[in-house]
Amino acid sequence: MCIITEMKKASGVVQYQGYSYRLSSVIEILILGLMCKMTTLTDIHFWANSKAVRPMLKESFNIWSIPCYSHFTVMVGMIDAKELNKIFMEFFAKLVETVAGKTIAIDGKTICSTANMDCFQNPLHVASAFVVENGITIGRLAADAKSNEIPAVRELIRLLNVEGATIVMDALNCQAATAKEILNAGADYVLSVKENQSNLYDDIAEMIDYKQSDLYELKNSPLDTASKIEKGHGRISSWKALVTHEVEWLNERTKFTGMTPNCNHKQRNPLLHILKNINRQRVA
View 1 (spheres, rainbow, N blue to C red):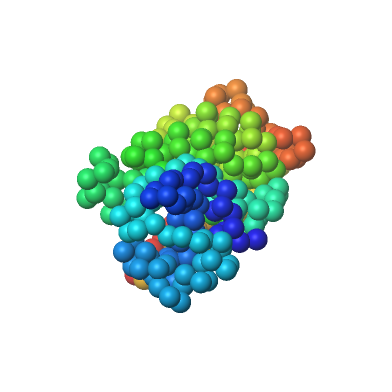
View 2: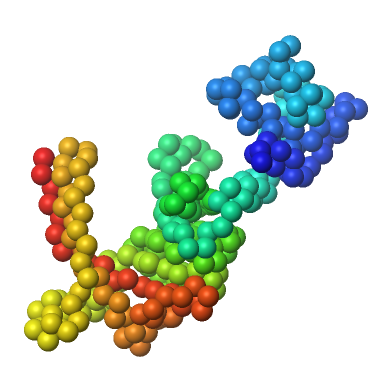
């Protein structure tokens, strides 16, 4: 399975000076050029037309003709970004084979360099879906600004096949509508809760504090604990988390649905682990 071969799925043919050029061929040339450490369109076009490369493109990739540089750049601008992104997502999904039983971390990153580009009113923000067990990003969508990450994440979930997986997201995406999208896709969710969901955060904090202080709860229904020490970036971080599976009461107090103490992917019942970080120390 080769990503270059997958690019042949891209649609579009352009007629120019009696020749027909496929947009898929332009995409293949771009990817091959980048793999050969070319960094600009000028370098890639010059490389593709070299005596050493042109026979390889004909023999291995069935690319018999290359447009002139000016038309080559025009064709690059004609590439359908959404179609290209779909092809990439389908390809990497095949590499993973199945996400059932695996963890998908969905997170957003701001591309700071786009803040100074005239074509963007705001810095470009990218939402990515990363399969933790495979170390592969299976999907990515761009949004114009940080505030647009939430709908971009929901659209990404709809586009991907996440059935049977557990989706992990940060506090920004701790939204009832996002949780519903995950359930509709046949997946489970683990969401971080912070002060942006003030009522939910206070309810969870109060419940965990009660279970830590009440003698009956401590004896009959103690919290699970997990600890971890991390070292890096010139500091040592000590983490301790408390875990409870008693989440049914949240179904009545919040708009989040489907939370149960037992998780079974075949029954499509999500499991929400409530984690509260109670100790973090940084030592220079």
